[in-house]
Length: 617
Image (cartoon, rainbow, N blue to C red; front, side, top):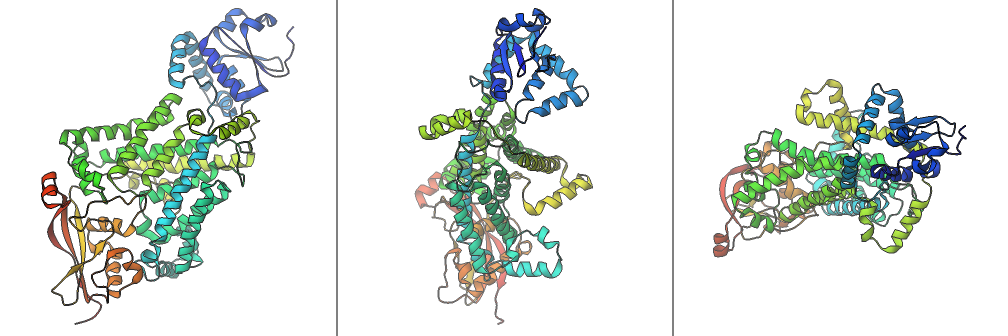
């Protein structure tokens, strides 16, 4: 008669390479909660189980004496691992799951040699479950650097953009909202600026965010610091409106919000004291990366834009993007066949590579280099502030500790090894919070992805309501840059005059103006006004009220707004008149640049905004 075990016993075929690999992986997950023994050593102790049964399926003998085999034995074994009990629940409660999984188990068992080779190819030699302590350490510090860039960059511009003498004063905006909307305004416009919209308070938010980012870089109180960073940046995004309405601002808020639940709980985290990074939040961050990359490819195809479908979009992109670099000028000179090949490669990176994010370990690791390489190429040819750096940070989450160990000092690796030997402790209340978070994010992001194909207006009313409710918090966003490629480059030149006859142009710090000034690197800093000038040029001043406010501030001589510009042709007093002309800009070629020293050529198109004056003639 069989004697009961102190712990469950899983018996496997030691002659099967496939079995040995996965048994080692399960043993790493369950620890000493399950005993593992090869059938070749212990089969004689269980005469009631035939040799054929041992050879065709694993056998789990519970401490009560019950015996289970096949897929059920696997799921019952994994149920002893932390947070793995859901597999057994699915097996026992969802119709046909048991039937399908048992059939799959038998199929794999009948083709062990093939699946053994496939396992080695897909997962490599690392049999242990991957850990992400080093990954989290690196990701959170890079996120701290990105927050530091975002807040410090905005700090230098905030007064001119939304200060009391800025282009779009935050105080006037919130006062108008307060007069028109009741208590609902706090949900529709979530911002700490409801307490104050003074220039000092706006500076405090930027300065406070910069300080908090430094704390995150040094790993001090990461969870509360991340929450405050998210709250501060959301507050500024709400009141800055157009100036903080870019996709990377939403991406930073969404990434930063998820990172709150990915961070360690300790005030001064150390590997030996930290709980493991939440697998659920890790996959939510990877899902965010997938949505970001895949959506970027999908919108290019679904927009119907012919330049993308005919693979000629890059013939225009380097020249017409908002703030190109001098490397972008050279990239524009490349032959047409290379530009088409580059577009095809871009589609591969955006539409195919993202699916490897969810693949087994080796394929997932293989997805990281091409994704990062594409971002580095964008950094080289265009200025997109911290967007590419943030995308690279998300790509780093595809790596695990085993792939990163060689890049860290021995002291940290020793601490990591100590942490891996310690028992894993999960906090149940945090698990409930994360499960709720995951449900909300998956539902909202699923609706976003569906809306990308069906258009949001075709979604069911309840789905549209979910999007409207979540929109003010920028925690689940839509992505996809350059759905329609701009094939020309209109540029607005702002000019002032005191007599209405002689006009002098205002120069901007970074956007094209002077034909001899080369396109420069400015990222990761983002000159928000220069960027908005690019968007304004694609439309009309009537559709960009902020632009009219901008011209008014120039006529008033606002010091805060003038600080956003590079040069002031009227240093003593503001001009009497102001206007804006529209030019069409193009890159020069090698011959023209060599002969004339110019990077740009231009033709005047029309008057963008008619002559304005604060004084009547």
